[in-house]
Structures are given as C-alpha cells and as structure tokens.
Image 1 (cartoon, rainbow, N blue to C red):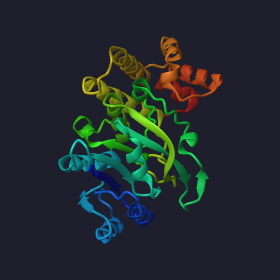
Image 2: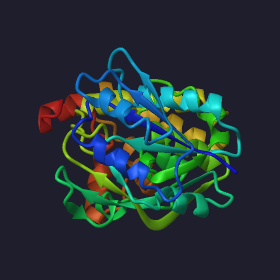
Image 3: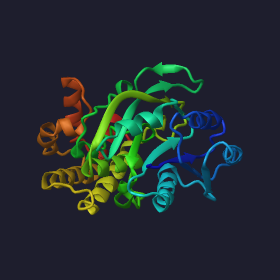
Length: 313
C-alpha cells in the first residue's frame, strides 16, 4: 500500500498549530509519516510539536534560525525524498489551517493517473469564522491553467489543498531560492509529468489572518515585484529542459524576461503593448475588458515613470 507523507512547515505558530494537529489526528485516512520543519520558532511551537509525537507519526527537524517558507518546505521535501518510493504520495501542510477529516482519503481516491490532485477550500479568519465558501472563487482561481500562465506567475495549485506523487521529488528538488513559491514549482513539474487534476470537493478550512506566509502577506512594491519576476523567469529558463518547456513556452518566458528587465530601467516601452495584448489570457487573471486593457497598458510602464506619475516604488 502506498504511503502518504505530510510535510508540515511551522514558524511561531502556537496560536493555531494545536487545532491544525488535531485535524491531522482526525483524518479518516491517517498519514503514514509527518515531517515537521520548525523554522527557528521562538514561541512554544516546537514544544507543541513534541507534545503531539505520541498522537502522530511525526519527525521533527528544527532550523537554528528562520529561513523562510520556501526553504522550510524545501528541507522537508528533501527529507521526504530519502524515505519515500515512487508509488508514495506527499501532502503539504501549513500550520494555521484546519484539514477536513476526509481530506487525505478524498485526494488519494481521486488522484487516478494524474501526478497531482487538488481540491477547494473554505476560507476562514483568525477566529475560525467562515469568510468565503470557496477559495477558488475568492481568489479567482482558474482550474484550467497552462505552463505559460505559470511562467507569468499565475498559479492555480495551493499546496495545502493538494496531494502529489513522490516520483516528482527528483525533478522538483532542489528548490532554488529564486523559486518564488514552492507549490508553483511543484505544480509546473506535475503539469509536465503526468498532469494536474482539480476536483470540486472542499478539503481544507484555509485560514487568512494577516500573518500568513502567502495568503495574507504584505503586497510587494513594484521594484520588488519586477526584481522577483526577473529572478523567477531566469530560474525557469535555467531549468527549461527539466521543465520540458516547448519552444513556444521558452520564447514566451524570454519575452517576458526582456520586458521585465526593460521596465526596471526605462520609463515606457510602447512595443510591450501589442505583445501583452496578444498574450493577455496568459499574463493576467480573468477580468472585464477595461480592467484587462489597463493591465496591458501598465505592462509598458517602467519603474521610473511609475515612481513619477503613480507614486510607485
């Protein structure tokens, strides 16, 4: 029988972690192992993990200092790779969510021949009150994503809602620090190595409370966004063969990188507009005509002009 390994990342999570661990205990299809990476917590998080080792098949690895969300999951996945076979599965867990009791059972039953399966979530706040019935609707997530949209930074796979095959680990790892979001990297490899299967079932209560590593994080400045985009696309192009990019996908990435570099230095690039318009369905989330045209136009606006006219930094 295939094993399921949960990789859990924690950092100063004492407020919500006990409820999260309770939901793992309650799984109708229990995990075979849990690899918990505590990312240098200074509160009682590590103690809470230790207290739950008798209830859960948990291995705890502690980082001496906080290295960030991506690094913690990368470390956990590296450890999982050493202990799992190709027929096993991996589930990613955040410290502040609540898993529905049938989450692992549902995802394992539904994955079929796909490399990765993911469900939907109910959105809750810091007090556990529901704020939205569907994470997909709340975040305008399209279940029919493409590699080009992933290159552009539009990810439709939320890690805590997914289950993927351990056979992906050799191609996923290592996860570079230039990978902006670890679950996007997982999704891109899954897309090219067996495919991704979305299912409508709600499998998690996804908590957004203002301190999330991703969902509630501070919005970056324009300069930060462009610099991050540059590193992200450079990383993709560096791994184009492992990601099995087609010639068209490679050209798309190269053009987007060219525009990103240009926008960091030039005030305005008129030539970006026709390309952005032609590729608008890959570059932007679905929106009305006016909103889409605004986004197309802004693709031509460079940082110097944005600072002067729009007060961006």
